[in-house]
Length: 324
Image (cartoon, rainbow, N blue to C red):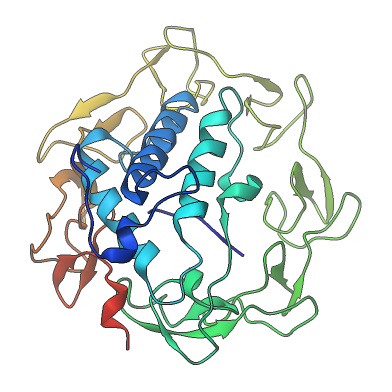
């Protein structure tokens, strides 16, 4: 099973191919479901204060076209029932902000392509993994099987452990439960959900009022003890007491300054306007426009517009029909 990552209607029905025009279980065109999924993810980002521009309105058409390409990929498990079901599941989460990995309806079924077949998305593969994509986004890889518990692994990206497993100590293993040993102090990556590596042992994240050094339980911030995040306009110190998407400026939790093209970015108190990305240079960081479809791109310059990939120096859709 592969969790949804970034997938995408623009006010008219888009049909990239016959497969893309297939219907959802409710009978609606798949393009409508892709649009509904984008809208649900956009609302989720706003509700959960996630500072991302990927799901802003100007990216909706690009998202839908990418979504449709995924549904028509050879062997894809990323079909109409999945897109429709995930959209409904995300929309149903009106208050909580769970990871999409925690929503069963948003974990795409595996595809049907056998190991060794050319692929662009892991959702095409019966083994659950498209190997070789880590170095060439938008390029082609080869289907491979996810590694089971106990299998040797390197964590290099050339292989991947099965869902729910991590590459720990050179082997695929489940995240450690409370009380079990861990090696990366202060990190959450080795331990089960809600736990962190406290020294050398997985322990519960500190709760409200408990002492902390960096991390706290969800929705809390660490200022020596775990406290509720301070909201917009609230008093703060130089420490990061402010809630998501806020910065402590002049003793008050404030919304970041929005920078336009070539404006300064890269600090907690600044953020690029919609349609711009913060690009870091040797000595500074500036807001630069995303590169549109068919525009020239490099690995070090401004990135392609969300849901496009820099392929052979050009921003294009990740079209799985190129992989033969």
